[in-house]
Length: 207
Image 1 (cartoon, one colour):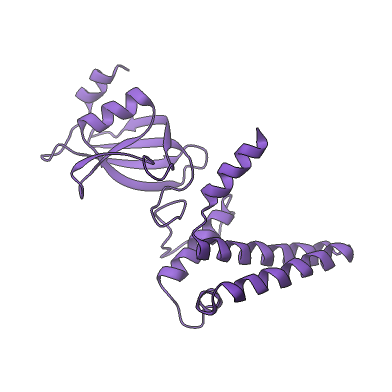
Image 2: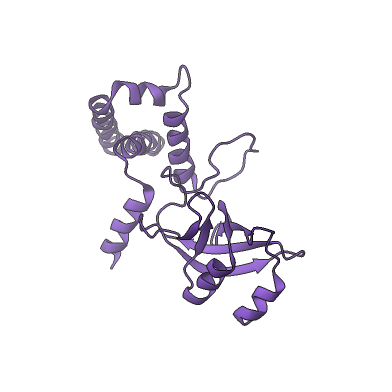
């Protein structure tokens, strides 16, 4: 559909804005909710890179223009009333300014389901613990003790992984590897490293 036809189909509010819900095109995970004006929608459709309108700054906001965490357009749909759009994207890095992959990491309720993005969820939960300390939380204990304590635990867990592998004990190895991954994620949050940063490095190596 031509851009002009799309612009005729959607309905901007009295401030000239349209709600935009953004999803990961592979997992359908909701990443964020923002707004677009007419120009932002045009730019998004023309460049195939998502652009929003920032209400706080009152200007166009090309996602990732400073962080590098761009969103590549993979699909765009408008709802039955034409007053909201669904944007499906390939997310480079993380969508949330906190470093979480999705802005929706504050869990209120969730049924037990198989999660295909468990590492992202654990990472987001660690960020939530850092931002919203919880009494008795082991994660908060690690942050309180600081870098040396986190590194000590990573060293200990690395040794446990080696022992588990040498013992040819699969269950033990899985358990210890999960401990190592968890403590590594705590280190990442502590040092301001995102999963997107790792993705970029792995992509370089894959080439």
